Image 1 (tube, rainbow, N blue to C red):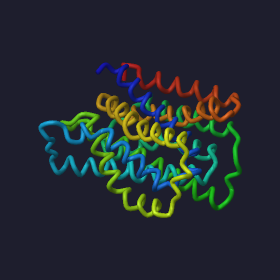
Image 2: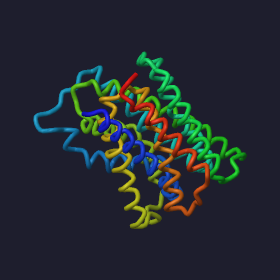
Image 3: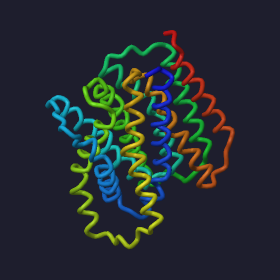
Length: 293
């Protein structure tokens, strides 16, 4: 895959994540977090059965199985709990600001876990990503985040940042394996479903499913495919050809896309902070995608 194509895959993958993070706040107002995550993984498992158990079978070595479980545990199970619970408790502004820490978190973990060299341009790109997205989220206004519930939500969003950074770093290790992005996605969703199922059953026993309207079911289905299939496939396809520290810069698409969802679908008003964020994101991506190191 050409570098430009890999960058487009990474950008698209995080843009999908940003879109579903924005829309998930609408869903968690009705559906409890564990139940929603269980439904999400269940839909993904059914959709990806052909890749989970391909014709002729798929033998997985134990080290690869452990890595797949770790990827699902951090990137699916814990991230879903932290992100959905955090979005439900804190303001969109605070959530977006905290998620802007992603590029820096990925760069640091890549340095520690993968011993990747982080060059000067990548460091500047990470700084631009943090400055730009922080400007965006600070300029959006929003709810007062001083309550104890909001503070708990903010802490959960910090956990989501850590989990997503682990997802990027572990995913880089998986891309060197002998299985493709669709197989990786299928297996981590299957593991995520198994991990979440007991909690989902617990919440489902006391939940009135009549509260879920046909429109909300449609939104849940779109959320499940986007979160568990499309975004994972796009991200892992690009990550196979790009160092994790560089790929982390493309996580700027997550909070920026969330802002666009707010503007287009939730009636938020664009501000100069949006322009600053987009300029910083573009400059950061240009720095990372230049061929000369």
